[in-house]
Image (cartoon, rainbow over all chains, first blue to last red; front, side, top):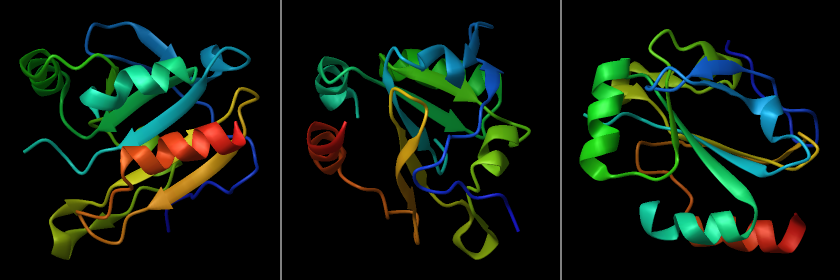
Length: 44
Length: 101
């Protein structure tokens, strides 16, 4: 079973490269912006 | 999503879309659709698995999921879709942000 996030707990941190090779870390938004994560079903 | 992005920004909310596609496909789609928000290719499903996005082979892929994270890093909203079409409308998320964040 895959890990699932729980409400009202800290969101799991991640760092990944966007398609321009720039690293995006969830923690870089802390105290700066809310984040709306959208997990796609796919483009095709 | 594109049409509502500015409203998210005005509510101090960034949108990050995470998908299984490889980098080149992601990049091509992003430029073709001229999308203003962040796109993260996740072809090895690291973030998708971390957040528990469900794979449903009978429904031909990963079911949609969404999470809203506040300024402190806390998860304030979660939605795991039951079907490929089970995606909350942006207006509902915007209303939630206005109400709670």
